[in-house]
Amino acid sequence: MIDSSLFSTNDDQVSPVEHITERELDEVILKMGSFLSILQNKKANQAKLLICTIQDPIFQKCFLSIADIDNLSFLIHNIIRKYPTLCKSKVVTSALVNKRGTHKNRKKSV
Image (cartoon, rainbow, N blue to C red; front, top):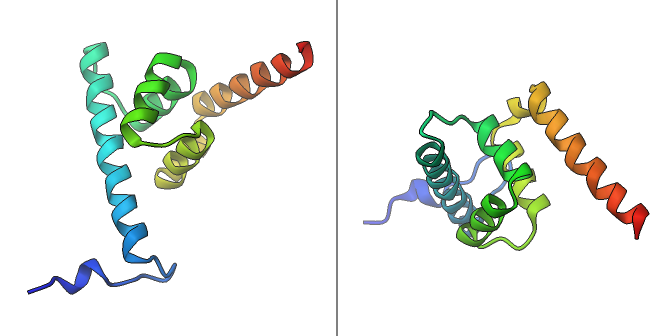
């Protein structure tokens, strides 16, 4: 028997394909959080995961390849959408501003 909860939609009218994609992204985020925790031998939270994704190019490439996503900004957007409290974090905002600032500086120097 098919579980009807898999195909139920909420107020956002999420299609079954989008629901599966969201679940896959959730699994990748959990896997990368565990990987980060193993690498640093410390507990990792969502803020630490996002900051490492922004600042570490090797971790970025690994995350993007495992998530099968081509665009870093799309990945960051999805992480922030999944964990909206990250927008309130001063550390995360400063990391985003620093990343944006270095990106703008590169464009100016070219």
